[in-house]
Length: 544
Image 1 (cartoon, one colour):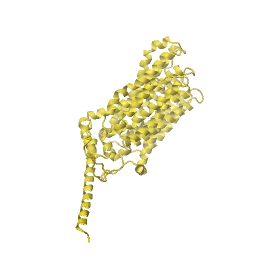
Image 2: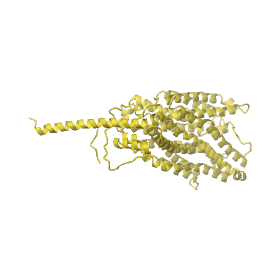
Image 3: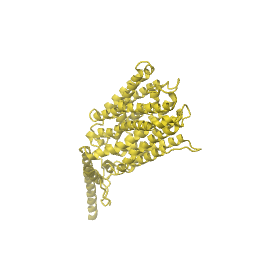
């Protein structure tokens, strides 16, 4: 016979389970309501602040990455012993060090942001960039140390910091944005890259003009004044980072991280109310913490999620599309000075004199400035106009298709376009500007945006880091291949065939784009391919 006490205990246990189930249901609904509040929030000053804080980082990233395109020519006059230029291996070293560092930083910081938190890592990567940029500007030689080796080490370290900025800025802007404007907010952040490249060329012109008299009065190859110019060009890259550092360190944690990774629904809903009204989060350390039972990032869960083809194909699509794009984007971006020189665009009129040094540096800076204004910057902002209406996938498909055609024309028609007779060289520069335009009004923008949207919160930063690192692997492959191939058949004779190789990779990008979903006007949770009703599975007892 069952005792009365056992009956009461059984009823109490049943009541507790029922109460736990009810609490889980209530919190599950509360979570969905909180997410809807973010997704439907009107555009506010806080969104502007997030955009500006993240944008300054990308401005600095692009400045630091692409300033070497100009600085490598300056380094050649100062430290080059082969025709007053860096050797192929030296030039490759200083240009490829940053993409290699990017690859490491993207994977590392992407993973850490999902484990430790977006806020806790945001600013750390900027500090690494600032220190490494300053270190390059102060680099020197010693009997046992080559200055180019020192610069390569600093550029690798700087690359780690820049790499960390990709997933962090993408995820923070994505997770704070409203659904209807998320694409434009993320594109505005990424578009700062164009202004960073423009600023690098502009600062290059300013420092060259500032040292013009010193260069013209110095004996060829004008080592001392040119040594000043590259140090100023590189070193000034840390200024915007220093300005942005405070704001990065004080930006609030994203409510999605608090809700889905820390699993603290109460704090997340409070944060949403505070952030959307005041732009700040307030943490009450005395408030009871109630961590819910919800999907948690583990190796087994990672394998289970990406073990499904519908999820794995998205990661393959975002990673390979970025890889294919960066083959051409960095193949052109880090070597535009070489390509412009190869087609004798703006070539110096003087022999190898002090005037030759000045004209070479001036023309390279002007050429890079033209490429930024005519192609890079407009491409970003046309993407900004259409990304939330036309969509990410159509823009990426269109971009890869047009780039395939342009590279085929530039590759197979290179010999005629390089002719000194007729308008061929001007046509080549026009086509070059078009490729820059359709890279940015195309896959260069969308490969950044889509991985910041297409995965669940617990893997969003990690997956973005993997996708971005795939892109930088493409950049490394492109740089190594460029310097191994460019002089086949004579100095700069293989450029046409390199353009044909770029065309092949753009063609493969079309097919990888078919693997990604269209993410416009969809909530991040809807895109993640996970059922949201019943996402919270239980509620343990609260702890204080």
